[in-house]
Image (cartoon, rainbow, N blue to C red):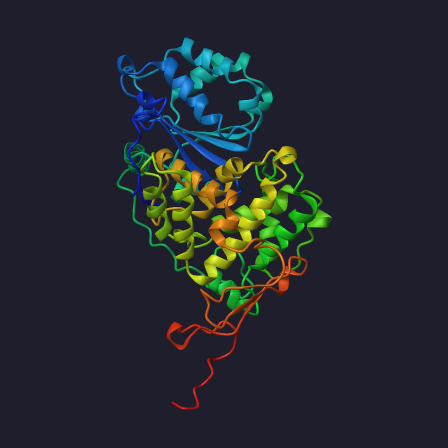
Length: 446
């Protein structure tokens, strides 16, 4: 199989005032969104290590801890690209031992998997040397990956930050393995989605197949359950759930079968399902167009917070009507979660770290670590200032209308009966979209 990877990554310039600018500028460590099950992906690329005399390895360790500290309270995955580690840039064994000893339980507890890509004998030798120090439980988290294609079954491969050097090396390995250049394989045409499909299809498709319900059933059911059972759960949205169970729940939704979260009895399952639903949308909830606007929004560090909120409001109001309504529903809920942060530890900032990359991502490639910061700040502003950004004093209660945005359209919203949330009416004739179901009415005067 010929593996292709679009590495058109939008990488904003790193602020020289960054506390670890001397290390961060090399791009050694990247955060690449989430895996299929909502676990944060952190990438370490050896090929980005400069010669040892140009890099303070103590600072590298501090920067690695600085980055991990933002995510270790949630479940995360570490991907280590070994290719590119040479005698000229290789840290000493003493440094490796010190590094392992400094990563205490808080770093190891929530590390769910460590993927070592393109391992060599050096890796296996080091592993054997450190084996007496490594717990059996931690050792079970290690997986050797010989080819990049093997990552596809575990990770969101297209959003994974893979250096070009690693991509070329993988191609060379495959060519050597097969005795020639890897053949190009035609991708089979995608199967048409089921009428009941919920994951991996557009908001419009879901609405059309669900009697014009504006809010997708997956969102209404997970949000409703979490409001009732999960608001005071510590670490809500930070924990993962059993992979097989998540697959089974997704399958039930896609087949149009009922899902009983009460029977499952684990609030982390609907939390992961909600994140997975957002991440598998063909286009992010806040649309591809917003990605560049978010990067521009925070480019000027001196801009006052109030002006940023105003700009966030302008960005959100430019969304398509349907996206606006669904985003308002979601952000309102996340605001409610943040109001219980004294108990659940999920402040707007912590929620933004989880949901930022599930709301905004580029059309092509992955999100670099420098691009991730503006996304998280943007998400935090939306959560914290939801009433200002989306309008109305209580956007989650009662019936509300979007007359300025949807001419003639009334949105009926009942938090107690979210499945009845529908758009009724239709746009002005110029809008071309009838939201109430059925064919457009004919103008008797035409």
